[in-house]
Amino acid sequence: MYNRTVEQAQWAKAHFFIAVNEMSVIAKEAIVARINEIAQRVGDPEGIEIVEAELLGAGRSRVLRIVIDRPQGVTHADCEFISHQVGTILDVEDVIPGDSYTLEVSSPGLERKLRKEKDFERFVGQKAKVVLREPVENQRRWEGKLAGFSQGIVALEPSAGKMIHFPLTLVEKANLKFEW
Image 1: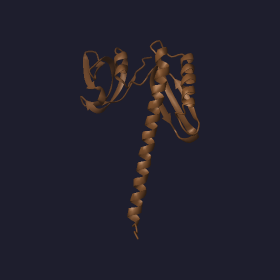
Image 2 (image 1 turned 90 degrees about the vertical axis):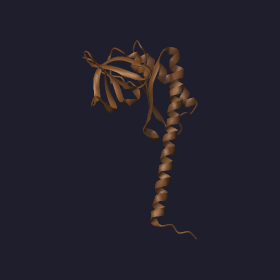
Image 3 (image 1 turned 120 degrees about the horizontal axis):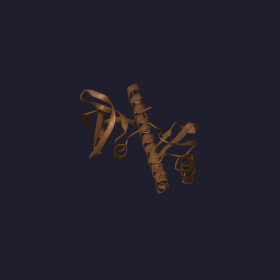
Image 4 (image 1 turned 45 degrees about the horizontal axis):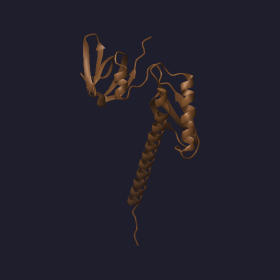
């Protein structure tokens, strides 16, 4: 007969909890990847970019948020189109198993997030706020005009005549900065 000590039993519970938690994160990432694929398949022919998809909450409080954009701006009809088309496919294919969810489709707003290489390429010439993971010239937070993007390197002009460069991988958070 095997007798566990209290420490061994606590370790086993903690180990099991961590394993379950990792599995749910992996499953959620797979669901969001599938949602992105479906949304892009629907949006691409219409010239609608899928900026991001997020699955938030749990149980009956789940929210699927899809953010869309297009060069000429997002209309209510664009949001309605994506909501109807993507929502129907998600329900038919049962991509989000379990309880119900709320689907929200919106534009990224005036100060949209910049995440992908193509975001930094598309918005060259516009003002941006950037937070870096590590300082460049002793500073992590920068604001200025996006001056260029090439081979994974962002060029930012924080003031006239001053230019800084940093790899996209160093960007923790970035968004456009609307000037009033």
